[in-house]
Structure formats: structure tokens, C-alpha cells
Length: 139
Image (cartoon, rainbow, N blue to C red; front, top):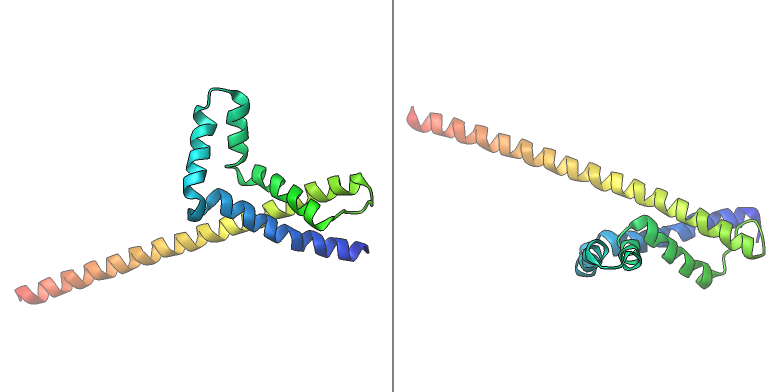
């Protein structure tokens, strides 16, 4: 595979890795298992058990597992054609996937901030309307 093709694969493969990692660790559809894992990561008796369950709740940590699955599924190697290519590909995919997740988190935060600001403006506008209507009613 050419270097250009490897780079394209790097940025494309990181997309589903980021999507799966984010969805499992943040979205409502996996809320119950996520909460169960969080509880186990904080309250389990053994440190290895706590660390294992923590790895299932952290998007960065979980992205390593998803990346390993994609490396096996796609047989993707970066720069080198032996086992070292898998290592380079793995850490590169994790890095790019986490950049994508960071951008997504910032985008969601900006959208949420805009929604809150819009709701605040709407509330203020409604309050001003009510005050104006009350003044007109008393006059």
C-alpha cells in the first residue's frame, strides 16, 4: 500500500473508531451498562477489577480496544509491513480518533451553549412581553 493510501486509511479508519468509542462511553443508548461499569470501577474490592471497568468507561481507554478490533478486521499497518506497522498504526489511530472525539465534544458543547443562550433570550423576551401586557391591562 502506498504512503498516501496508508494516510487516507488512517484518517478514515479513525472515524468509526471514534464513533464507536464515543457512543459506548457517552450516549444514552449505553447509559445503563456505562453506569454499572462506573459503579464497579469505583466500588469493586480488587484494584484490577476497578481498573478493568474504568477502561470501559473512558473514551480514550476504550478507543484502544476498538482500535485493536479494527486492526485485526482490516489488517491495517502503517509505514512498516511487519508487527511494528501494527503498533504504529494502533497508536496513530487512537490519536486521530481521540482528536475527532475532542472536536466532537467541543462542537456539542458549543451547540449546548447556544441552546442555553437562546432559551435565556426567549425567557427574557417572554418576561418583557408579560410585563408589557400587565402594564397595558392596568392602564
